[in-house]
Image (tube, rainbow, N blue to C red; front, side):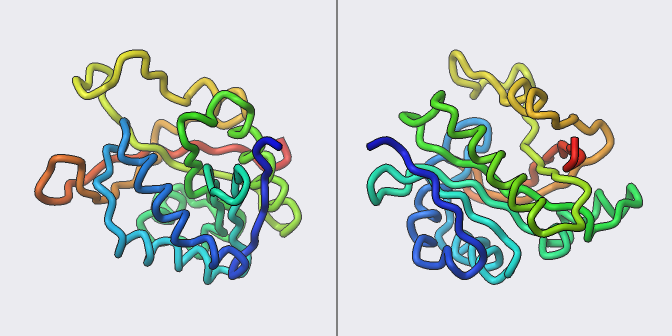
Length: 198
């Protein structure tokens, strides 16, 4: 039957939250995030998205199994750490729709699902009206990071092909515990932006 894509808005995603938490912890455990998952944090993080009436969850399902998810939320509903770089640039927060993440199990990659995730979120932002920009951020790792697995390729070329521009002066910092670490550390994430009507 293949993978089907289901779009849920706000509270409608609530039945899927436990599966989404497990998926995030599985995918983000790999490079480049190396995230040692925390169920309590996942619950709080996903609850914030579910509470936003204008958030969107794009689910990839193989049968009834959630194998991928992509999220988006109005920037005004995000945490201050994500908002601050836009404030510093003088952008209007209410004109930005922020993409939280796209996570997809390895067996399902390379099948065009990543494009469908972006298509669905951009479509949702247009339906809401009033948004001029879509944006997301991604963790930065050194090019010579010894933890980088063989054959690793960053997503920069994919994002650029989608019309997103790498920002050289927009960063945020978020804390999480890496695999094998005893405590959380600070990580720098770079923003990418695209005009919604591009």
